[in-house]
Length: 165
Image (cartoon, rainbow, N blue to C red; front, side, top):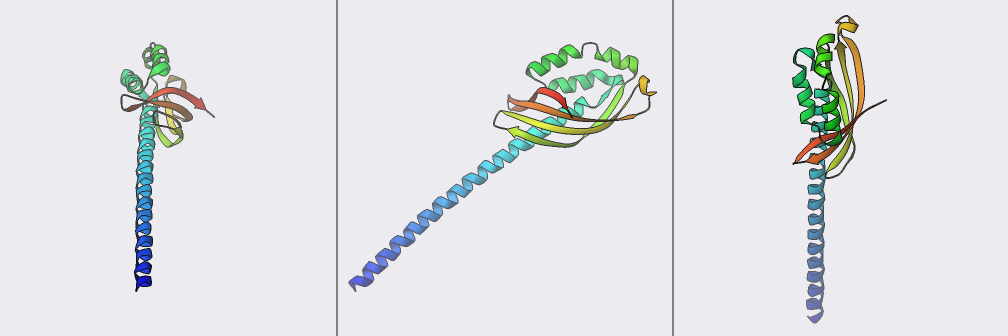
């Protein structure tokens, strides 16, 4: 009888250990899934911000150029915001003289690198540009653009834009 009690005690102890071990595994899996979901959400937010910025960048119409410029400026920060503001001073006048219309869309975008407060994204666009030098006929334009983004006031802002091959 004593052996039976000892055997049952060992079995109960082993089952208890298995339950604790299983609980730890479930807890870890839950934490891993939460981290993965947060990372996926961050990637989605980064991609949405990059797409919005580039859509504004590749869509500009001389008839309402300031609205297009303002849309890009709204998503800019830091040195890029300063450079963009400085470079667009005479753009409205030039766009109006050339009767320039650029229309485009993002074909794809991919996060190259991201952490909690910064990211790099590559974006490919396709579209057209029409102005007096094209005889006001649309001419195809494709761009590959790298954006650096930073998290500012709970939003992703563009801190650098560069055209890549």
